Length: 101
Image 1: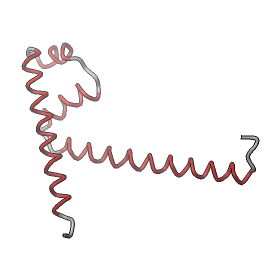
Image 2: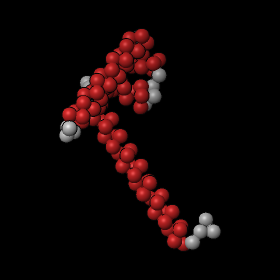
Image 3: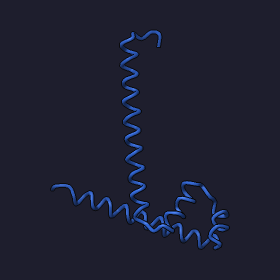
Image 4: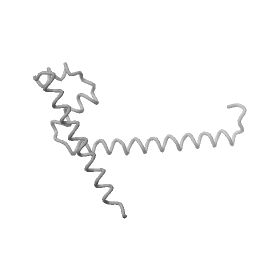
C-alpha cells in the first residue's frame, strides 16, 4: 500500500468500512428472519432444530437426549424442517401480498 497516496488509502479504508457495515446489516436481517421463522414453530421443534443444526449434535447424541431411535429422530427432524419451510412460505406470501400491484 506504500505506492498509494494518502487519499487513496483513506478511500480504500472508507470503502472497506462501508462493506463491513453492509455485511453486518445483512447478517442482522438474516438473524432476524431465522428468529422469526423459529418463533413460528413449536418450542419442541425449535429446540430439536437448534440442537441438530446450530449446536451440531449427532443423531446418536440426540438419541440419548430424546430416548428414541434414530429413525424416529429423522422423522421428527424432517417434520420440524417442513414446518419451518411452511412458515417461510407463509412469510413470503405475506410479503408478496403487501406489495402494491
